[in-house]
Length: 173
Image (cartoon, rainbow, N blue to C red; front, top):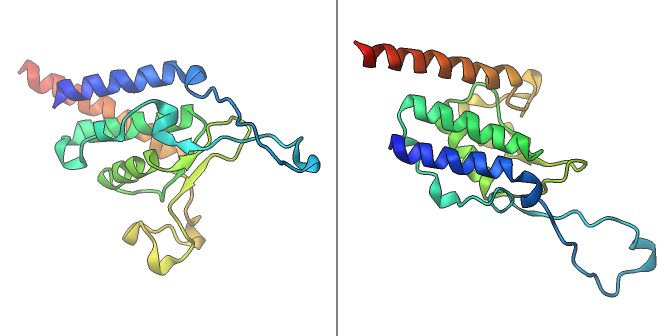
């Protein structure tokens, strides 16, 4: 699985490197458009994986990854969304299996990658009784449906570094 992960990470990095090329969009010719609307820009929408030029089928279920791999995939996928100016709103403190599952759902969600547009993917309807995050619902008094904060994001990198150091130490023994 490690080798597969390395190939997938290479594909993700290639997508990030080719962002400008991947987000090029030729606006459609709109016929019979009223004159007063002609000046409005066309903001393109595609599924996230289409912007990224990645196949959602390439991402296995969370159970296939070990803890280190799962954490790494969450961090690198989250970083890819941010690189494409797409904000995936997730409740804070979700387990990484749940974060990964929602990031995979976000891959299959229509959005735009325009730097000046509101590129948000939210799974919240605002109904706490039917919150998709279950027990991890960030209720209104706690910043309901707040973005996965940068602290948790960078904590992921710190945890990754510690796990990598532990793996190397165990391999050297």
